[in-house]
Length: 183
Image 1 (cartoon, rainbow, N blue to C red):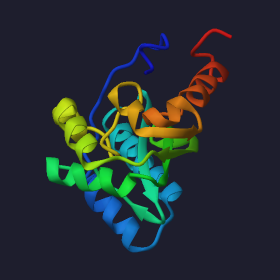
Image 2 (tube, rainbow, N blue to C red):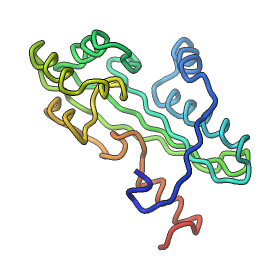
Image 3 (tube, rainbow, N blue to C red):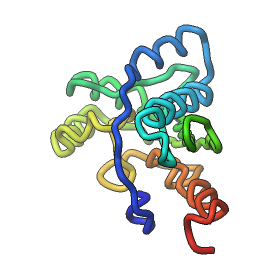
Image 4 (cartoon, rainbow, N blue to C red):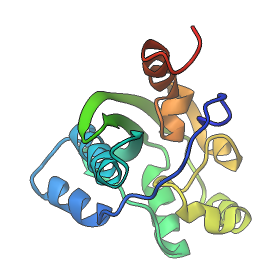
């Protein structure tokens, strides 16, 4: 997303057991907003120690429905169950971004979008998953709104970029205020 918006980036993977951090936060009853923020912060912190001379941006996204936090499906059957649970219901995507400069956080933003999934038949779900293939395992809701996943919804309330997993407009605003992008 950043590159498509004209921002040059280097990608550095975080060395972090995200699943363990997420599970711990869920176990303590942390709200989705705090989970997304904590995961983004942990990623940024991890990478900032490896690259203290760089400005580090990290993001994370949480899907929550009726106070249940979802995780990415790892199998086609798990993806089918996820889509069946989302079918006919509203869920929320909470996206957080954190920026570190040196080894300290200098900016953070959390935003949320509400998505109403239409009633999905089992036949539709099976066909959708067949067509989507392994891409179903790439995102927590088993969809990419910018592609085939658009067919799942009857209503969406929220920022497109937040749904994609990065609150891009606030990130770009921060970079402009920092003098890193033209005004």
